Image (cartoon, rainbow, N blue to C red):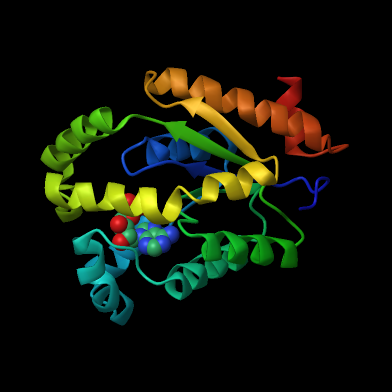
Length: 212
Ligand code: AMP
């Protein structure tokens, strides 16, 4: 990781429906960070009927993960398409240890690193309640209660092992995801301020963030 670049790269981490997308959108609006949601990219591919979309459609509907190669390629493409961005918010990526390793490599190659991994902690009962509401609102096929159970299991089996990976790097910050949306945003802002303070760039937007 490069501590002294003036980019801010955050991973919003947590099970499906933890509020990652909601918080990511707020950070985009507030700081101009670029949200990279592999779930959104894959859904767009499915909707467009592209070859990629056809490849991933059934896997997504089942609640399993698509291959590491596919999502890593999507992320690298976006890193290169947004070279002037102040930083990125990774939302729903990485979801496996190989993805996390690939992200570290991809960022290092581009003179950046992961600055913080913000874990939104929400218990399973509340996740189920949220998903029922989202299913009613948006009608996402993989939000039905049965598939959602599989997605939670996938998270526990394949994604939760990233917690010790990032804890070992000293990058893990935990936030109470059961709080109100504003409450969670306030906790996320505290983490971002702490990161900005550590990076202490002489100039640039991170320094300005601390002046506010
Ligand atoms: P999400 O909207 O992030 O919950 O993603 C919806 C679905 O897209 C997941 O259940 C997976 O099938 C697929 N997906 C999204 N991101 C990834 C990822 N990083 N790795 C593998 N599969 C993913």
